[in-house]
Image (tube, rainbow, N blue to C red; front, side):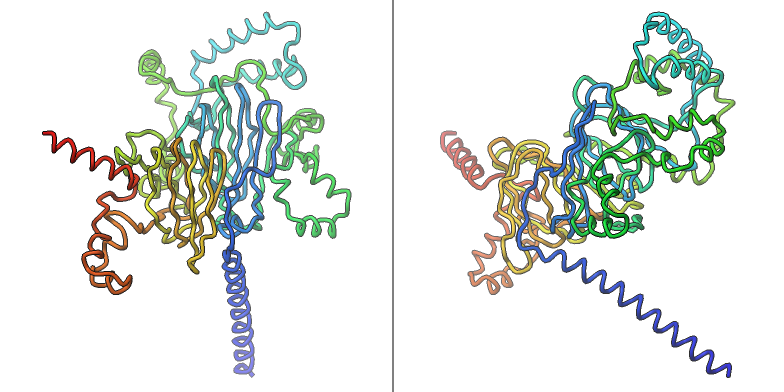
Length: 520
């Protein structure tokens, strides 16, 4: 009897395992089928949301090339003194600052509040607010920023403010943000703050479906990927909830707090119901990016050494109350989340005739190993060429920062599935192992490329480190039906590596050089 039970149990486990394996293989096969692309093109944003202090633009992630890469892309513009309200998303993402400067707050769960007000700054802020209150008696701030809000601020001054680290961001910065981590952004500069984000929908940290989902903690947000919602998904929602909720999907949504019962929320936070209702934003019609009323000041370190020396004594007095780090805080809370790859001095590849390339991977920023993402910043002069290559282990998502270029992409059948001139503000995708050739036009070519592996690798097809250079000349002669001298010319005509100058400009430079030698 026991043997029969054991046999039956073993058969059940075998069936279950085969079912899971078949499901996984079917899922992988379905994803691979999505990469059987006949056409790739550079795309403009499909959806645009205007807010009181900026705009949010997104690309339709249901397009075949986006589905193949398993990504979504978004561009957010924040005007001066605009605030992008706190939110989190279901996927890891990389953010590149295209223009401007500002502050970015990232709330890492379980990490300590390392930014703390001092007694001196507390008193100065209290006096300053008292002066502002006398000057603005006429109710310059309305609604939640009016007198009640000011009274709340005065009451909160009974204790010092503490919060997690706030990072200064500027043009050229890449920010790595894990899935589910809350972020907010404020523009304190004199020009719009523009950043582009890539959501890695197929990442292992996304346990939901392959749709980008942003959860807001404040405001009354609109659907940021409305144009990206496929008809199939709308039909599924219609079947479950009816037409009324479909209309709600197309309009504004509510923040996460609004879904809770007001009394339960008040009990959980130990606040009154009126404050809980403000958290839920029942009467708040502001969307994702709002205009800050008055000063937006918080605890932050000094920007210069001079300011730091002035408060050095205060810092030394406060050292006794500092927290003690533990292993988790050292490994996660203090990880580098931001790095600038826009400056010429950080270039990994540089050619005076062609341009430069900067890379960011898990070796230079370890958090990327957890997110399994990397990035590359390119700056090519006019008529320069990015060596034809393919990505060994990653998809690439290109965003054109400035200029324009001619781009060709070839698939495994030797078919050119993309032959376009890309320009500023467009996005295009190069799937894994597809060969790509890019040549800058007369205005030059700048881009940021997000990659779906933490240590993405390329194999070039031209230049000193190319696949052709590594092959024996006799092999090339037989493979391409040429003599061995031609094969050697093919191998050694290019002494550059990745950033290549135009052949025409090289010949022009060589002829001028020869002419100079002749004169000498």
